[in-house]
Length: 69
Length: 461
Image 1 (cartoon, rainbow over the protein chains, first blue to last red):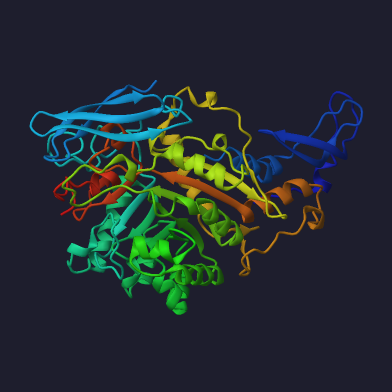
Image 2 (cartoon, one colour):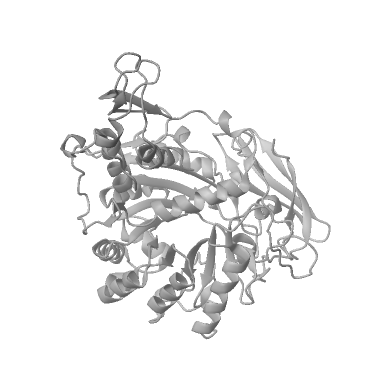
């Protein structure tokens, strides 16, 4: 399973607002299940970064379980 | 939409004959007439969800490498033939015809067979055949009773080395209860899962169905599998007047033995061998009735509308749903009920087969956490509350969900096998569970085990 490193993603900035992304609370929902997690986001416009390793790792695994059969 | 006309077999001469589904209130029968042997009518569906609503259409996945016997069409021409519509999800390999029980309900009819066990070289050729014609599917080693062979660990090892990742044995569990070292050898060889006959939670049930008191053996087999990190699927054969009242207790037993017990897979009784008269309808239980029993006997914790028709085999063959066992012991459906309307558009059968294969390989095996095998756990152990699971990267909720679902998902399903009285060749053509014939051909499970009323086999030699 893939993980991601917070220190790597924190270097991102929002292209629209030119603000650095900061870790903040995010609710993700999939097929009726809600997960309150923390992800890098733009404090001004709320843009959220889902790091590739997370999308292809844990998040994909959760999706697969919820989609099963 | 499902057609009401289909084809079936004459129970007397095994000729292919026209058949149709006949609706009488909420009960559905398969009606068929052989010009020589008369009309036969057998119940196939009683109650809700309705027969018409229980559908999940698929676009066919014909075999890439068809293999045929040259006989005239389905179901005589299996190999798989070029008209078969689903890939192999599980290949069943019968490694012995011997058994240490003598059950009335046996598919394999082991009593009459005293053939010598196939050699390791023969079995190796069957693995190769499955790879060639069925691809990298799941494997179930069956029999007879596979654990009567002392070299079963070698056979499991051979299958793993042939490239099959998920190997399961279909067993009565007696040897697994009596011989811990054997269980460990099976684990070391790479056995993932045990498909354990488990007809009830009291010895009178085992006495009636299997001819012996077996409850303590079954529980010991589960314990020994748990000590060796082998997943267990409880497989009750459901027979009216014998064990329908224990459906809820079987599910509770499964829950109490999570995470070792991964699933309950009900099999309504089907009838093989010699029957001079038609099997009366009161000796059958249909899929919607099982769902209703589950709902009633779990006090509504599990509901009929939690279950879905399969994405792999024909909709009329099965139902399934997944549940999470909560730390307080209650169970909740893993999937929200989004209605069955989502299933009306055809989806590719090949995709359904791939998904079902992966799902079985994961859910029916012992769970892994972060790639590491867990230490053996005691039955009934509870999972730490999510608050205690520390996540360094703010993903506590995802981590807790993954941990809980990997460890404590309980799958509940049922599969209705067909016998000569209710066989629908449309369903046979959608089958994904294929038995390996002695010459290496793949034959849909129900066709392989089908026998006429006089006991003559359609395929089995």
